[in-house]
Amino acid sequence: SVAYTLKLSSKDIPDKALEPNNSFNNARAITLPFNQDLYFTAGDEDWFKFTVTKEQVLSFGASTLNGAVSAYLYNDQGQQLKESGFQSSSLPTAYLVSAGTYYLKFVPGYYSAPIYKVSLSVEDVPDVTLEPNDTSEQVTNINLGFTRDMVVNGSNDDWFSFSLSEPTQ
Image (cartoon, rainbow, N blue to C red; front, top):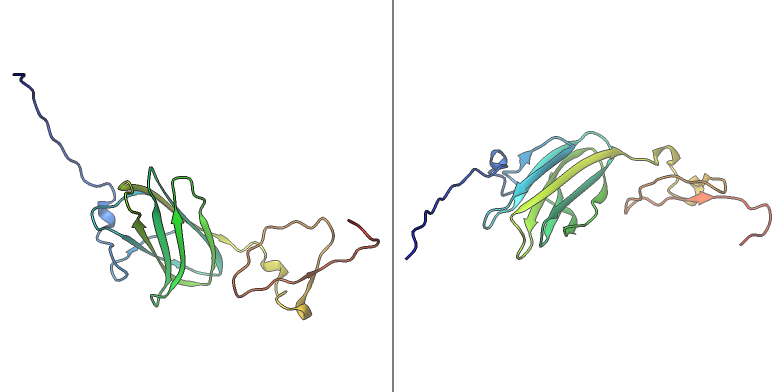
């Protein structure tokens, strides 16, 4: 027989101050930008609540060492607006939001690690100086070589026109 010593220890979950946040009604209020390592416990889902003061581009993402994390964006009425799945190397999802209060729910994938990293941020909409250009009557004239970062919302068409002085390929 061999003698040995067994030593057990534990520590608090680092995001314990954010709990309970397991439902729409218990969503934890946060300010943006928000970047934090979070932990899922058995049967856990994490809900966050935040406010956007004007139309902006919301970027959100999650990563885990293995497995997947799903994210669901809701408006203040509980209507789901967007669903995204994230793997270890997934890029963030960008979504155009109006001023208002939003909720974001994170759920672990099957066989996912309990530790995940979340990031949320907002940026001003890059193409508002070109609006309104939502119809052929409101078209924006551009020149060849025009380059600009823009965001297209599902309900927002963008119309542009340009002229060519001679045939080209």
